[in-house]
Image 1 (cartoon, rainbow, N blue to C red):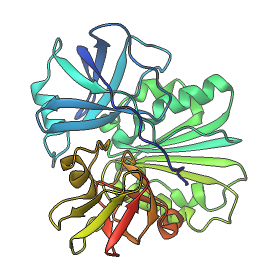
Image 2: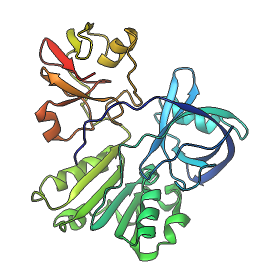
Image 3: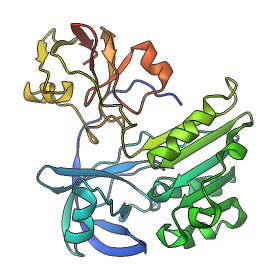
Image 4: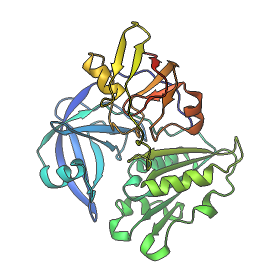
Amino acid sequence: MTHAKKSFPEHSTVNAQIVDIVNEAEGVVSLHLAPVEGSFPGWEPGAHIELNLAPDLIRQYSLCGDPQVRDRWRVGVLREPQSRGGSQFVHDKLSVGDVIECGSPLNNFELVDAKEYLFIAGGIGVTPILPMIAECEARGASWRMVYGGRNENSMAFRAEVAKYGDKVTMWPQDRFGIIDLKSLLTEPNDGLAVYCCGPGVLLDAVEGFCAQWPENTATLHLERFRPKAGALDGQNTAFEVVIDSSGDVLTVEADRSIAETLEAAGIHVPTSCREGTCGTCETGLLEGIPDHRDSYLTPEEKSSNEIIMLCCSRSCSKRLVLDL
């Protein structure tokens, strides 16, 4: 899994009206959105949008409808037992007819070209994968998917994936136990692309198996909803950041992130998760040694010290020079 250094896109929003709310499974609803004016921006499989649910309550959700349809968006939302406020708001407060401000689609989980694909979905992690398997089917690409959940009643969009027949293996844990990753991932084929989205324990296990692969065989692509355990831990001390384009020097205090410091100085930095999982704030690093605390970059990318996530990472050196 690799990520290319990117420039920040222009931040834009669109107002959308909720035209339907569908119960997709136990604890899962889908929001069907229509643009208040005109049509929605285009998107490709793997993209997500931000929903501005309330002041200081912005959450991101994967688009799981048809990318070719420009007058409808669909997102799936799981009611989280330990919700930080977003999923609870969606389930308890939103109604058909409500208007929500939405961010333009962003995609840090793109569907790459490959000889064949293996998709591993856990629970609500099926949402970004739905348009991916539809795209693979339309291309005539070779693919298969394993979809796991606590039980069948908790697994959303079952009927939608069932139409693909034996290309999809449903894996309810109460019947079959945990997904047999060893048989799936021990010997990858050349040209295989593995996509996985779901709870952290599944992602960590998949990442562990794939770390043993020979080089240049298969590629792994992950999307996390939560940081890795302990990723954000560590002592916070003050340090300086330099904006390369202007030479401005800013002090990042111990109780502030780099992103918050830049924002306070009037420098726009796109962020979304604020936990180092989504890749939105990925920025080039020209000098200094970062303290990487994200759950997005690969170990190789972290060791290169060429990229940093501004929302959560800090510095091991007195100063960082940012490619901004």
